[in-house]
Length: 160
Image (cartoon, rainbow, N blue to C red; front, side):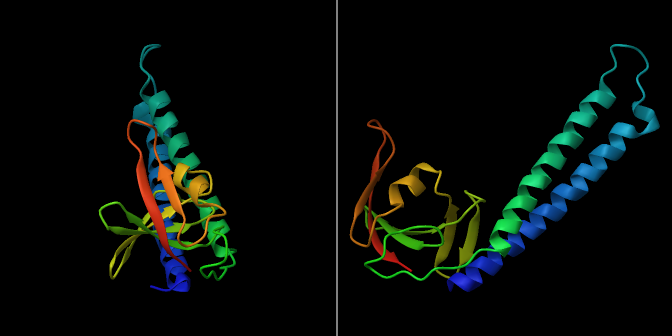
């Protein structure tokens, strides 16, 4: 998968998530304002709880909208073995067992996984522990992620 295709897949995934969360926020708002949610007494908190859910869904939809906007305006950079890793780098990391994992350093949406023909590509951000470790590194460098009790070592095998 090329980075341009990956970018389009991220935008499509975020768009789908936005639709789901927007619909959920509207449904929760409808439930919060429905006549059956009118409190019967001072201890009836059904409407209040529904309003909290509606607000949470609306907040999540706003976060997704911001992430979607950042990806729609993102300019993809090209990298080679000599360029330091920064935003929009697609990085292949090999662990100690020889397993290669792919990561895309994006502005938002960390943790999202995009299916690729060879597996999956995980989106990470510069603020994540792995993202911070990768910034400024080049092909061939090693990164160690985790704490002393549970750390893993990875070698950067490719950057594009």
